[in-house]
Amino acid sequence: MAKLDARRIQAFLADPGAARVVLLFGEDTGLVRERGDMLTRAIAGDDPFRLVEIPRDVAAKDASLLAAEAATPALTGGRRMVRVHDATDGLANAAKAALAGNGPGIVLLEGGSLDGRKGLRAALEKAGPEAAVIACYTETGAALEASIIGVLREYGVTAEPGAVAWMAQRLGEDRLVMRRECEKIALYVGAGGRVSEEEALASLSEGSTLDLDAALLAATEGDAPRTDRALDAAFAEGAAAVQVVRGALRHVQRLEVAALAVARGASPKDALDGLRPPVFFKSRPSFERALRLWRPETLAAAGAVLLEAERATKTTGMPDVSVARAAVMGLAREAVRAKRG
Image (cartoon, rainbow, N blue to C red; front, side):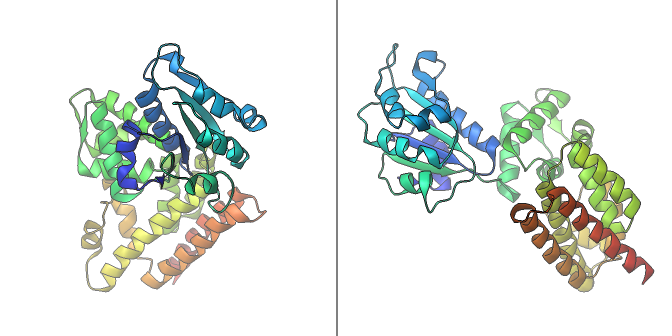
């Protein structure tokens, strides 16, 4: 089994079959935790005697511990779940021992980004059907919108397409954040309700995501002072540097698509109408003003600069907040130059 195809993940989490060791890993820690909870419920249900959680450091020190715990029968019968959070490559030997063990239990390892060329991932990806490796990467586009619709459905509400698109642009960085915000908006509209764009804004109009939106809109309009103030607010609310740069890149890419349409003869209004997901209604005036300042080739160049800034937030010794701030303020300076030209 090893690396699991995305289309099989939900069915596997409901019934892992003969799998002995499961690794959930990836940059979306919220999705890792959510899928881990799903698998745990499928195996152990609500029976505390069928679930044992082992600290990572304890499991790493004794490579036979996970195998021993998986081989121990549950007091109430049934299959036992042995769960380890924050898994690292230091658990590779323990995972191998669990695969070779005799017990009926299942070992669940949950980790962040792991190198597939060595260590824990490599050990399990090379194993047979008794191992499963599931990547948990941040969802985007249609997949993220589908997840939002699904979570809202769990809480008994539906949403207009425009509201879902707006939420997807703001809630895609972490699965736990997305689920928490969906729960909040479901409570806001009430069971059986339908979320409109206005209700989505009213429910979610706080925190770093809206401050970041304000910063990006101000930057591409050429309002540097407002950009700087909004960035201060976004960082104060807890926005991560890489989130800021990725948000700026998405914003610039959407503007570029619209700018290309304008260059082919479309009006700014028609160009914005053609964007998917749709531009949130309160942001349209700012988008139209930006379209009158930016050319497609300038936006393409800005996107390349932002890609380099994203790499810099991860790979250089420079303070990542400074890198992100400089990247967004660079957009504002370019728009100011366009105004003056």
